[in-house]
Image (cartoon, rainbow, N blue to C red; front, top):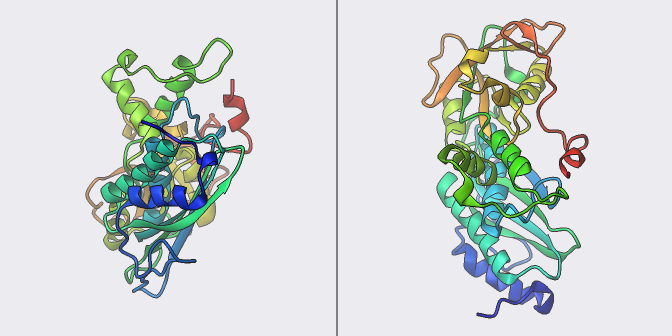
Length: 327
């Protein structure tokens, strides 16, 4: 079966393939006009954007088009959920090399569609843009509705609050380490994953890295349960907890014994896309949230682990870390 490259097709032909792969729109005005029209019953719109770039954010040897569509949706849906909001629409801009196969683009669109259906039913891709670039780049804007709630900010943590998390920690970091440790050639270049070489646990960690499943529906539930602050854990627990602590003017003391069998990776691994939240100590934690620490008065360190200043840097900083992983 002939699989053309996008450089041999018109924008309209590529867009038609994407639209077919995405399925029907639920917007007031969906793809096809200069802009979409999306209902905003709350009269406030939560908006976020995230960009995935080949090199620092993914490698085509390791990620399929479907993987990339799924992940680019999931990371944005998680950011909307972390505000206590319900995702309502995605807008996707693709910048692709001419040599990109049309089947890859269709798979990417299906990944976007399926991630929305699984993680945020009722949310769809409602528009976007196509252009040509030497570097494959996927930029997604996500919109959400607060449905009458106050937005949950990073700055609301209060002394005495319980620090809790919803979602697994450390799996994505282990998955990334697995890719760099086992699936590069002697020159350090990525090579395709060989699934038959993976244990069940390794397959699970790799799936967490390539197709994350953030607990999107738990964001609004945490807000309804009385959370005082919340954020998506995308750059590592310690690094993101530090951001919450600094925004709130407090210190967050984490318990290593609450972080599972691999607390070090749970603390410093990135891209888990769990929800980190704080709750008053008298508030029962909502389903699937578990306590991992306490908010204490501000000290000389924004984050402590077991009462001690944490001695590891950890986490993900694209301006400092990505070139070190190129091999």
